[in-house]
Length: 158
Image 1 (cartoon, rainbow, N blue to C red):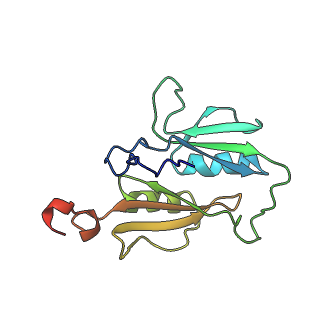
Image 2: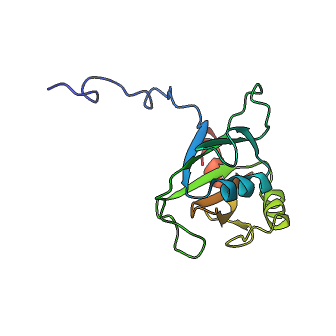
């Protein structure tokens, strides 16, 4: 049986990865309005759907003709098990890279959003903080730390 690893060079080995970026993430919620308002407080706008819609897209602008590289889709699910007093949604974490972690932290705090901790510089080369959305999804907001050894090019001998 011949597999893709037999007698072939993978795209990654050729340094020609087909993956470019993530365009959207879809999160379930049992309270569309609370979730949409939460993401509005973080600077996103409704570009599709709305507070009473079964599917809502949150984007950097409400103008759907503008091409964005990130969208948060909210999908209504009346059986979604989380409420504000329960544990995490227990599915994992999404990490959003932002232009300024400290400004995003301030935006969250100004919107009365509880942050898990203040921004910190991590050993792995990112400045970040976490919050939990109204549906229990753990969100991390991060940015690479310039000059960190992790991000230096291999050609530099690091």
